[in-house]
Image (cartoon, rainbow, N blue to C red; front, top):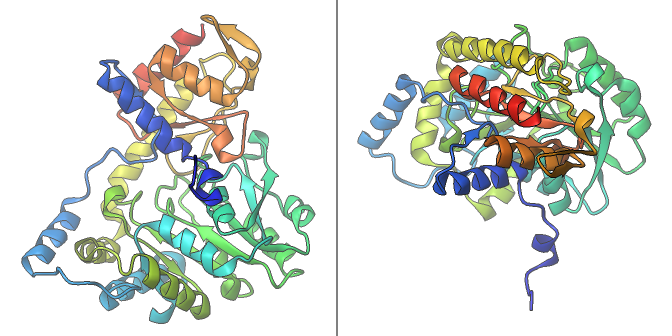
Length: 394
């Protein structure tokens, strides 16, 4: 008899983590799987960040940390927000968490009541919807199209708002589409929100520095949105520190205090050594990680050229992050190698089993016509992976 809670029984498994686990299983069986499913840079953490962590161990940082983060880390975050985003935050407005994912969960926990609606432009990061549901909110998906670079328009937002709308969550650069909202596009969205003063915005900027157009704009930079925006960021992507698990928010102080309160009952403060390392990362000139961004840009060019030769894959040019999100619906209803492809989930499984390439279904991101392909892999792996995909589908 299943005596687990309805909460866990109704929770979806993270599609990205499930595909990564399936790929590991097949590798253990001896299959040569190329993993293009996880959103994880394939670079090593920069040496200057590692040295800061080693020094922290030598300096005997081993005690519980303040729930909302070390004071000098908060000061580094404040400096970073001002330097990179022209945002002015004070220490009570900053909360450091065990990854940006915990920061998002904290926000949902302190902001949502049962039945509150959260608008999610599709595609959205895989965990947004379930984090909202776990906190008794209602995800409201706003469909976007590859022809508009998967970006929600102001008109679409206006049509989606109801009396129950409490929040909007979006990422820019976007996981999974790589789309970047321009200042004008965000201003148009902000103009709609001026008619709805009780709606709050979560601006997930974890891919901020992996940006190929040279400009990044934050919703909180608009004076009339500053008090209604929670800016979420972290070091996982830009500094290749996924396993270090440090994320943070800049928010109105009353929201930050609430996030601090709930975190104090769940995990308390984040890892002490990782926090010391992140101080070094955030104080550094972003130019020190430009080599990674330059390589991702080269890989983007490569994978788009290669996918352009795969019949039935419709792609656009993402402006940031390290994903492409091709529309593969041209294959739906077709049978290849005895397997019928009815949707994006079937396509992702077909590519794993027939091409030995791990991708992720777009269904997990709110778009059932696409698959997410990460190019956080070597150029050699990208070439081989797309060649396998093309061969399997032909």
